[in-house]
Image (cartoon, rainbow, N blue to C red):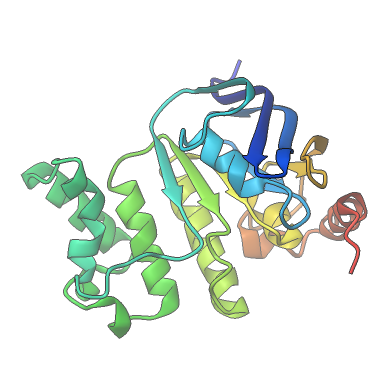
Length: 248
């Protein structure tokens, strides 16, 4: 049986406000297996990012249990690169915080920069490179810490559409290439279908698991861009769109 990397069992979270208690997440349960990409989608404000914060250990659930089998890396919507640090210095930041900068970790980072096309830009500053390259640098900064599980929270939504397609394709290839497990929060149904092996659909707040979709696409080129041409793609999209019950 595949190794369970993340196990959520009846996870709930209540917010306490001046007006009383608000249920944000209610009895959410699902597992994520080693090497699997799981998408989490749902209506805006339903608690998708909150769920990632619970998995990362940044928030404590009000009820239920969370088991995480390995080190977690978190990639956010914005790249959060410091403009006064060059790309090499930015990529080393997490290691600096952990007092883990040494000859071996520097060699590892330089290898990542070389492999993912940023070696010649390592002494450039963030404002001197494109949005897609900045996001790639943010990914390398996270990979430098050698996480077992990657959490991507709307990681491509700040990019223009064409760059977003290209970078989601790149990130998918990079993470699959190094056999990472990933949980991807996105509001983009097409992105979730293209990148993920399974998709968990959440309801409006309080978020409960509405459905889980196993994604099986027939495509010659198993990459996010290639998978968008699969004959089953539209069927998955229509089914998930109906479940989201979005009113505009």
